[in-house]
Image (cartoon, rainbow, N blue to C red; front, side, top):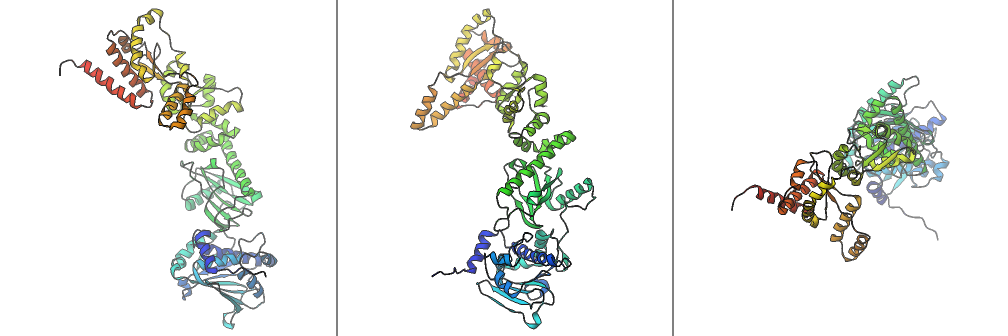
Length: 597
């Protein structure tokens, strides 16, 4: 025999309060949704009917209860049974006309949420010429339906909901709190809402200005709204519209940088009732520089009606809003380059993130975003026009190590070590085949250094042998060349293959036996390329060192130059390097200070 599930209302209320709704404060929103739906239903057949909701907190009722009066369509006794006594059934709701597109919520579920703050909920409702019906529900799951007593019957069509507060929920019924929540959730509703004698509705959304309003006046109105409601003066305001989602609103461009990893929260209204102040996923991830305030008639809320439901419509809406922000950037580039430059100074990371997969944004970054180079800050377009080739250092350390020396050899280099810069440069040839890009390699420098005359090279051979013996234990090759600037005595160069071998060796020392064998196999693929200490023969000090006849002093001097080259080139200092720096410093100091202990 089939049986019907029995529902423990206390358990359902606990589920609502602890797992579905973020806070008991939503009870005000649910009451407003019910009232707004009732008014909408009545005005569908009687357009001249009043559209008013009045909330009376306990300070005004005098009996400790909160009452909500609306001028909506009201319910008959049969509708009360169907809508207030059944949880989760939608077929009867549809038949009774309360599931139409223009309605906000579900009367029964919305009323059930009131049990988060109330032990008892009373509903008095009148539909048309039918008698007033009284429904009383209790938090333990009991309810009763009866015709209202003669003195308690309503004179007008509509509904009154009375909440008897729970002992631990009194703070949610204070008049100032109720006024604040009614203004928060229902300020844009197309009906009048009063708490006591204070109206909390402010009229239509700020972006829906009357016909004939100038663009400047619309913008000023939205800027004031952002300042008053969102707490900041926006850099700019971008109107938003997605007809497919019934969405209108505005995106407010933030005036200060934000963390790209932080999830942006947007203010979302559904049919002019506030859904949430922190909706995520409304904009693409790259658009973290904007905060939106929108109203939609088609996007779906989650079960708690506190977030947006992720579906195909939300996805297409997100793409459409991203396109509109992208279009704003393109218009800014074409009409106000100086303002675009100001924007990029604040929010370049978002634009560069978009440029990784958007060709037009890539061209915008190439043309307008100045990057650091060893010849000064300049855009990639200007750099390419001046030098023909975009030669870049892929990390900030590489740029620091090589930029000055490269400039002395007439090699212009872009610092592509900042976020997205390397990817942007490497992507340019995919949209313009005439663009040539090349990563700077240490070999690019050494090929431009002058080799020594044969006679000089023969004379310094003993010095090079002594110098190489001093650095052999560090795996470094000593080379003597002549290059600019003459003030630089030594340069430490590490090719990518040498750097890879160093990382491999460091990992090998920390790995267990299983992985050590794998790393040994990788290391055995060929002889490693060693880092180079390139001494500058143009430097007077280096020339004096090459003329030394004392092998011990040559070793100390070369070790000191090695340490200085590491420090000047921002290279990491290994324990062996630190020990060498210390020993060479003390050794040279000992030779410089004569005398006996």
